[in-house]
Image (cartoon, rainbow, N blue to C red; front, side):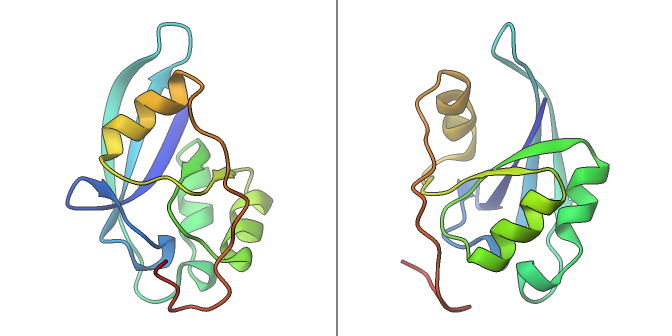
Length: 118
């Protein structure tokens, strides 16, 4: 399984569309181990209007662990076969471990503007 996390300084970026880069972890679901880590450059501009969903999907990403994200981005990722879990914060590796341990659930809260940083 591959998961992506919008990242800035090894932390979940508060907003998907403004992140510095995406960290992509390859995870062994049975052993709950991170097998590989890749960095994917963030596209310029708004995440919902970029090709990042296709890029990540083509890499085999099936899950996005994110902070805040608008409905357009959620819809675009979902259409690309990527499940979204919003409401994540803190260090990226800790969030991946929390997900593997079943400790993360989607906040179901979407940003309503492109400048949302809540």
